[in-house]
Length: 571
Ligand code: DGT
Ligand code: CA
Ligand code: CA
Ligand code: ZN
Image (cartoon, rainbow, N blue to C red; front, side, top):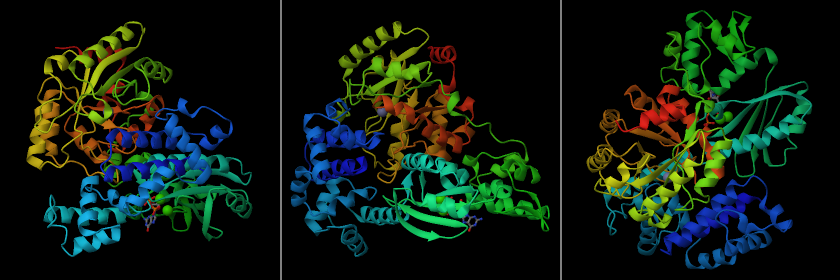
């Protein structure tokens, strides 16, 4: 059995517990376990077969370890079966509608007997939801909107999952003799947040042999199409992969065509036509003669353009910028010198500050900020003033022993509903790095939300706004605030905006990175690590930054250690 199945069982347990209003700590432990299992690189089944100790895994104790074994044996666990007896099987699906939390789901089920997404749509369209307690016409509208989004997103998978699929597929393709070269194009290459399918271009020495070998890939569940040009398959879990066979002379042109985006391609084709050229997936043609096609560089060059990084190919002004020689020199993963958002065992993280610092050093980083939660986040065991004071003291002591490395004593302090910070400003003012984030009251009206954030930005003790929009991709909508006013205030106060690299968040989203850069705000790319392995998520934040046109100079944590110290020194 796959790890993903085990993780899914734990998620289902957590969902049902949440709707039933059970203990938040219990819910959290199932969610954490699901994350641990989902992130593992090797099969859990092997660990069990080898008699390894599951409790060594973060978030897995004796109880959950036993459940893993139970799921491996029976495909499910008794806890889930019991819970299912208390709630119809499709009710938890309602949680996937943006804006519907467990409390509302419970009301919908208990008062209107809504048992599925279909029931929900019928009830919302019939105007039955607006009269329920705690809901209104607005909620009803939001539910319909949420259902539409869910339909539009159906079948799309996150970039993190997609990357995992690409790595596994790549190992298979590398072993095929008839495959000379392969590359992933499409939205994956542009590093969108989610991808609809994977577009893989293959140069084969023998197409029939290559196709034959590709189709032996074990996760393939269904062959959708099989021809000389293209093989389409569906993998277990639903991801579709289109393999296209491309000749070497056309590989660059095909990469351009299938990388897209569609809108970017249209503008490029117009540009070709103006030069009496024709651009398609086979090359750039003057009449019947192929003027370019082997590499992307040569095609762009023949169009009088420099090569444009895939992340920019969204028709957001990149072709005009390239034409004028004004493409940004995009920030790269190797420019990143440290991570400025991480949680430890002091709150809801799995590792100690020392372990995280050592891991950060192994990545070649020069600094790491420890930013545990403040007390308002009760389910995470957030720290009160006294506990944070002690924690900061220990971090500084540790830092004193780390040569050439700066372990910043910080916090992720909650921005309360009224805009006050969750800890005294005198304490916060003495810390090295303060991230301020919203973890509650996500649905305030825009004006109140704007004031709330402006209060935090203007406090004088905050260095960075954490995950500014508070969204969880496919699950929780972004909060509403006056973006220009907040960004302007950040620029004035020298407060940074975080690009949270956690794949479910990717927050700031790309278009707002671009706006913030234009307004002169500095960004920070952080992983929000809850365990050592999370530090590797940095690349997903860097991709967002690149899609947002950011250069090295726009990102604070590209600074050298000494430059960072100087920048943070109280003026
Ligand atoms: P996705 O899969 O929904 O995440 O997004 P993409 O961008 O990967 O789109 P996909 O897989 O439908 O097609 C891959 C690329 O192929 C797309 O970005 C541009 C190109 N392409 C596909 N269909 C058309 C088309 O009708 N016209 C043009 N100009 N390009 C197309
Ligand atoms: Ca695609
Ligand atoms: Ca496709
Ligand atoms: Zn955090």
